[in-house]
Structures are given as C-alpha cells and as structure tokens.
Length: 90
Length: 272
Image 1 (tube, chains in turn blue, cyan):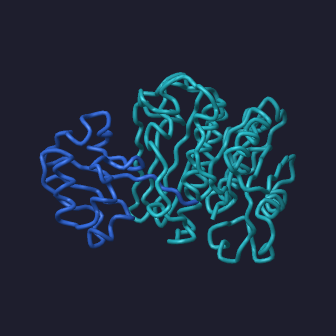
Image 2 (cartoon, chains in turn purple, brown):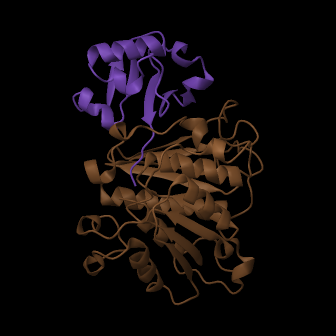
Image 3 (cartoon, chains in turn green, yellow):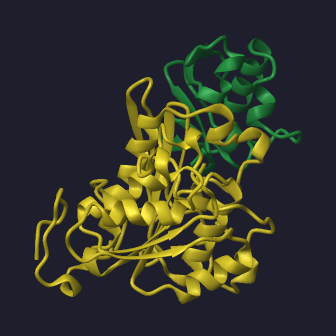
C-alpha cells in the first residue's frame, strides 16, 4: 500500500490521521479507494467530473502528477502521496 | 552598504542598496502582514506601502503583532505605520492606502507604484491572492504569495523577470472557493505560525530585491519558483519546485492584456 499524507483540513475525514495507507496501482484507483475508506474525502479532492480540483495538487514523492500521467500516474507500494491544497488565510 | 540581512541594518548609501531602494508593498496588514512588515524592517527595508481597509479588533491582537489594545478601532494602515515608525531611528518612508481592493483598483495601484517594487500578498481572500499574482506578473513585478491557517502555511516567491521559473498558477490553477478555504477568523490560526510565515515572506521578498535569477537553480537555491509548505504541528517544511506549466494562463504564453488576467471576483484585501 502507498502512504497518503493528509492535509489538516481533510483530517476530519480520516479520524484525525495525518497519513493513511491506501492500495491502488494508479492515483485514480488510490483516490477511489481513499474515498471508499473515508467517505466524503473524495469530493474535497476531485470535482464532480472526477478531475483533481484546480486548487489541489497531488504529488508522488516530490513529483506533481500533472507532469507525470495525471490521475493515471502509476504508483507502487512504497510511494508517498501528498495532497496539497492552496491555503488562503492571512 | 550594510549586511544583506540583519536585525538593525545600517546603510550609508540607501539608494545604492537594492533592499533600501525597493518599495515593498504589503497587501493586508493582518496575521501575515504584521510580521512581514517587521521582517522587512529588520532586513533593511526603508520604503514600505501598506494596503488594508480594515480596523484593528481586539481579536486580532493574538497574531497581528504590530497592534496593541490602544489601537482597537483604529485603521490598520495607520496603526501599523505608527508601530513601524516607533521602531526605527533611521529614514523610513511609509505610504498607507486605506482601501478595499477590487480588480480595477488593483490595476491602478500597481500601475502607480514607485519602482522598483515587490508585492507581498498577505490578505485572507483566495481570489485576491490570485488576482494580485496575475496582475503583478503581467507588469513584471516580483511578488510573494502566502497563506496560513491553523498550524500550516505556504508561501511562494514569483519572479516574472525569470521566465524559466514556475509561477503560483503553475502550481495552483485557480483559487479555492471560500467554503473550502476558510479564513483564519473563521477557523483559527496559531499566532506563531502566522509569525513564521510572515517573516519568511519578508526574507523571500528581500531576496527578490537582489539580482535576478537567470534560470532555475538546480541546487534549489533560487528565491523564486518554489512553494514552501510548512506544517508546524508536525514540524515539517516541504519545498516543492515544479517546472513551469506550458499551458499556464499566467506565465505559459506572452501577455495579451491585463483584462484577460483579471479575476472576475471582487475580493477584499483585509488580512484577517
């Protein structure tokens, strides 16, 4: 399973956990499984068309998936996935 | 000329010093803006412009460290100006603009700025952050864009003079809706986190006042083009330096018109 680092605003969906282990061979499959395990988190990351929201970035290790294969980016068990939304407060 | 960055920086030839000569424009004198202003002062800035439309509230004092109880009810721009003037014995020119920004006013503000200028976007409005970023980029004005909430903060220096570096929209394509990006006043922020991010903004800004980075620095030492993401509850700082996006609407193609880069929204410039 890959390790998914959860940003603070989304931890209310993961029982406060800052990282969770999720299976999946691609980012798309991983996000599907993440939402299956933690209901409600998926819609905060993807829009109703299934695309990653435009103010959210997903990184595999330190690589932005937009520069890889997007949601079809392949991942392996030991990968670390980071979800980083834009922060607006000031 | 004095040290590049220091506590009480002294200069003998201020206009030969890029930091002293630069007009640092702080939009939002709130949780980020207050420590950013102090950081700029400590780093040797001698020309500051402060933009905010809000008044000091007692609930601000925990993190908006330029203000004290006696300032409650006073315009933040005026209170910040007096606090900063009270901390320096040298020359310090401060321009205050006590107004709410909308896209039209933003254009006028940036067009009238004394140059060289560097903008620090410290407001609590996601749409304004993107609008300021886009408008600065279109005018070739370097900017530092930041946000803070809870225990976390982000900041990114953007230098339109260095076209090979990513801009803020290369990383985040659009502002989050308010319901998904609450303001600090709504969900809280740790004052020391705002202080950390605000001071870091000042350091990036004074870095931008120096020589232009000609290209992405493979050693990761450029001041611009990288997002610093702080999680101070976990004690981690991540540096994300994406490549510029070819289809970025802000930097991915030559500027067409200012209007095409404007946010359609009417954001507030108040730092909450």
